[in-house]
Image (tube, rainbow, N blue to C red; front, side, top):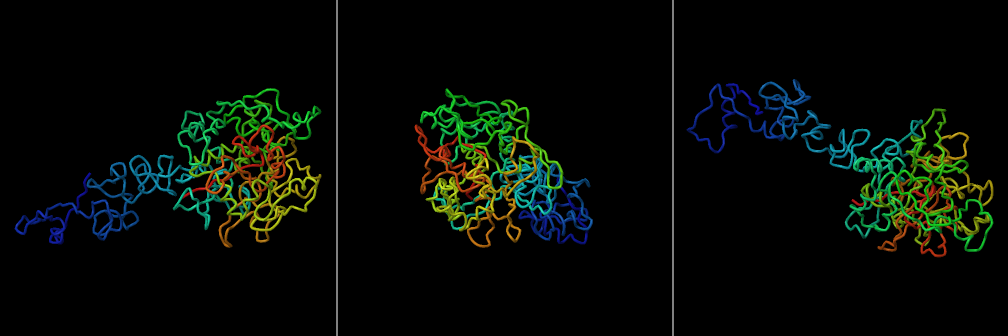
Length: 556
């Protein structure tokens, strides 16, 4: 609908000059007192002249919103209001019609940029519309719990200072040769269980309820990927299975040595035959075993003291005899539902292949061992040995309670004694009551039970009970003094990473640094190459355990 402006007699000479085009001549018709002409500067979709907004204010008849006498929109010739629905492009300097923010979102306006308001993912130019109805660039941080609950303090607790769990920090002075000309970013926080749930839910929503991770990755294979890993990815909640060689499903050493007695504590013997294992998302993050690792602890059977952080409802857990997850109680006695307390925690019991697939879907890649070593100033010679920076462990000696060839303080990494880290998954080795098994994090209280010890896994960025004098969480690492720090690199979970050799991917995964059960993670079964196998078990794509998680890196 065209807008017109009625001209008062005193302005006729000025208006004549405004409305004439190259077709006007000096002896052409002159304006009359009744002339009505469109003012070009007031209907060109731009803010120009003396306008105070787009086609409003100044000499224009339409008042801009916020101007004295302004309306909610631009008046049209009929005295109505021009909205985005009848304005075509919707670009008028106000939020109107179906727009979700000023001049963006909804049915007719352009999509909204990061940080703008939205109602649905389709309103955004970036990845997704968050629970807070803001466009965000990284899709996994769509939910609240596990999406923007990283940082100091517990959810709802006093003094909590939380931010996006997808915050990523530039790595100063580091270049990735596979991404020339781009800055390298490393996520500040470990991946949360809530972010993995967002991944699963998003794919399920796009595929008729089937979280087809295998199908997605087949169509979006990242730069570092092996198609052989895809057999370990889910195609549905219950669908997809793979036959696992029997010896991988237990510790083969007793039978190799001819031992026929009962297995030792925590030892699982291989089954008699190869076994089919379910790859569905209802099985991926819990008790289903794809390769036996010492200290796996991803099940919640009676007496198991398992600590998986991905929440499954009781009906799914009961399919193989697991118990329902424990609800929690805060320090003030308030109840916390099991799903809510778990979604904010760092994700564990997730295979290396799923971590790599998740980071690709989330717009990045699983971190490499090289970028982690650069940030922590760790020599590459540390490899998969537990340690961090200048710190290192002699696993064999520690089992004998000997510390001669072990270093547990120094360098950029905080001393192991003050981060969320324990040597033994069962808190029994090297000796009962060892200071190596002091728990510096315990939240929330899960009551008296024997199947669930998720309280020992921290949400990213939380302070341990051994806090720094200034109140900052001790597990913070910076390349330069004054930099914003990365959190939980030394403790909480040992971190899975892509194993690089110079510029080349080795085809294997790495397990870096320390966290809960870091000694169990480096048992002989996990880090020695078993007879008939070609790589360490922790390096396999199907490896998962309660002590391992990861974080993504990005290139921009």
